[in-house]
Image: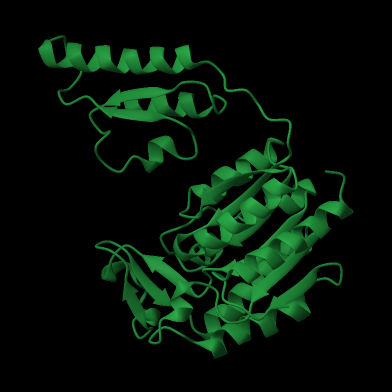
Length: 300
């Protein structure tokens, strides 16, 4: 309860303010305490129930951590516009190439990991006005929210950039799968889906035609509410590294998504189809060019 209360107060403070929580629960699942804040959690080893040689050492080191953060001071801010990019696993190479292309044009780029926290963190920064444009490359958090997967970032994911009216380019990165932490978490209706074990606690399910059509409707509804310049870019050969694995490839499901999405988007939203895998350098460069066109339509 003390950790919950303390971190709740910390989460109300802006990014950059030093935040350190010394707690007995720091060695477990800390997501509910940290969420999207820059809180550092340190295991206290012994319970903080009186002073002894262990708690004194732990408290001193925690205080030292705060002092070190304060001593560093505030980092010098760049005057370049900041662009947010989402990525996950195999799409990282694309994000890095895109980043390099944008930096040449005078932008600063921050990459966020779409694991349920990264996309939410990016959108909070968009809401605060810290990010002036976005390339939402990996939107797995949307499909995981629809089907109760691992990377859930809440019901408003993919809506904030549109609400703020900033330029946004969206790709269907990682929509070809849903992630679960165990076999028991997989809904009964998905038991027959092709799956891939990605590490000891992540099971990746290949999305099929029905799921791709449903999520296309969800995405179209979110993007249609956008107030600023918006476009969709689609890698026709594959949405993630999963499409490069023979046992998980399903071009029919991917095509079903594309054909369901296009007619549902309002006319102002342009759709660019690229004959490439999402990991190809060519796709990343096409994405950078498309994004810069969106920027030219706006004021940034």
